[in-house]
Image 1 (cartoon, rainbow over the protein chains, first blue to last red):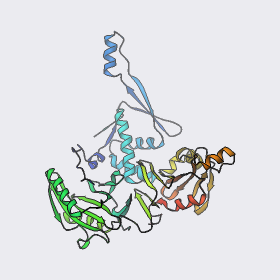
Image 2 (spheres, rainbow over the protein chains, first blue to last red):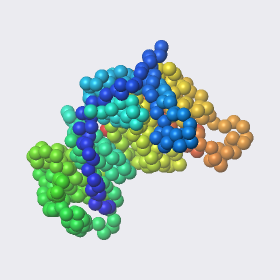
Image 3 (cartoon, rainbow over the protein chains, first blue to last red):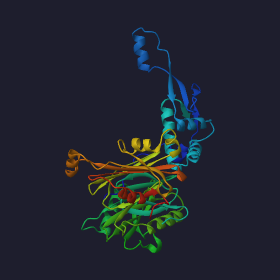
Image 4 (cartoon, one colour):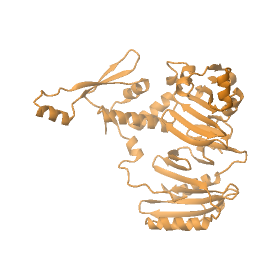
Length: 127
Length: 299
């Protein structure tokens, strides 16, 4: 049985600080609510820089940005609706936990995973 | 075990109480790291002691390792009430301080089950409060039970299973927990899903059990006992010659699946038992009694 290995490196943000961040929607994003109550997010997708470079080099016309679509399920739609530019991740997770009678930690994990995915697509930023 | 603001943690043989706000940050077969809002709060590792195990020698080795890492290690009284570990456990206390923090800890050895456990409580605030918490955790520590069963309690689920079921895999994902056990030529999988209201919005319990609890092909029937909303299904005993021959050769894996809703907590619980012989409702019932939400199952 070995000694407990110490963690290498320090995270730039503590968990508490990260949960205090406020998610903000990208201004270029548009929303559509379906009859089922679920949300569809429409967002501009620009071509990758290397594709633009290659197409320019080949003499092709500029690649116009296309519109990406992301359909959220009921849970995702309810979290998306809570992003108002004022509520922190912690507050949104707490509201989500309360609405679905979830454990706080479980709600925090679910909400942060969802925000990570939205951030990866450039749909939200954190401040 | 349960007290206001405290909860029970049980994993792979060990069992203790911790403040309610501490949650698992890392989970291994014999390792738990518990975190609170400000960061790591407690870490525990445990395992079987060798025949020549000596607590004193082990602590000296720890001191050398900690010293090599640039921290200062010293032996101290056990952070427990009266400086003693709960019977029959024997314990030694220690403390280390490094550049980025420190911890108080205990090396515990049980001569009955010969399990050695190493616990450390990270310094997070006033020393007196940390010591009080450490003392209470160690005071509640158990590394074996006297009823031949093993308790499993993390987050909001709790199971007290026969000791022959050994954990082979676990997943704690948001909304879905899965614990897989093997033992006595049987496989047992425990499930917990949430939120039930959303998961059962567009489909019935039978469809959910078939899709999510490995019950495809099982003929489910409603479960009405004990006021629970749920379904149960078992693979039938084979009637044709080829099927009976396979059963004799123990080729097939017969399944028994039970899934039920805990409406009060908005959760769905389920279990799947796989065995070389057809699973009976009595077997499923016994396992169901041993598995549930915290506060519902036997300690």
